Amino acid sequence: MASTVWAACFSFSRRYRYAMNKTVIEVQVRAVLPTSGGCAVFIGNNEKVFIIYVDQTVGSAITMFMRQITKERPLTHDLMGHLMTALGAKVERVIINDLKNATYYARAIIRVENELHQKKIIELDGRPSDCIAMATQQKAPIYVSQDVWDEVDDMSDVLRKMEEEGLRPESETEE
Image (cartoon, rainbow, N blue to C red):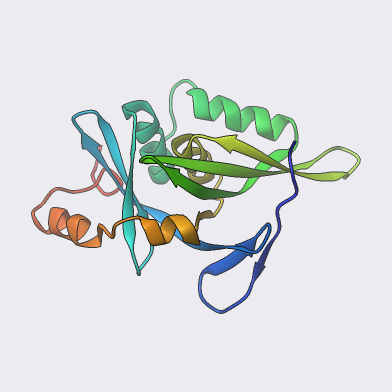
């Protein structure tokens, strides 16, 4: 059953509350780096950065959306975006809301408005990689629950060191 999720700012920081008083922190995709098994997506803000590993196709999609690269033919995330647009829907925000046994979980909050201007908010379970790709495509904010934020290791130094050594993230390299 889809439930309505609301977010209300409770301070001047990038921390918000959603559903049942759960605090979330706004983050951005900081970099996408290829790995031997796919891609490492560095997500965070000025306080902390953590990594979610994704398959190569989704990592490439996130990178293309970040760079606003147009493709000759629509890929899966493009098709989903076109379908949502045709139905009057848009990703309002994405929340990475749980971490269990090294597996991340996410929710996409979708706002739908039909031709009669009736509005509906839908919350969908999805892979964080797909949710991040769709949020990046539609320029929607990405949040992480405080519980997940507190559990993940800070990888800011790793990203900074890689950048200093000349390993440039896909989000900054030229095609």
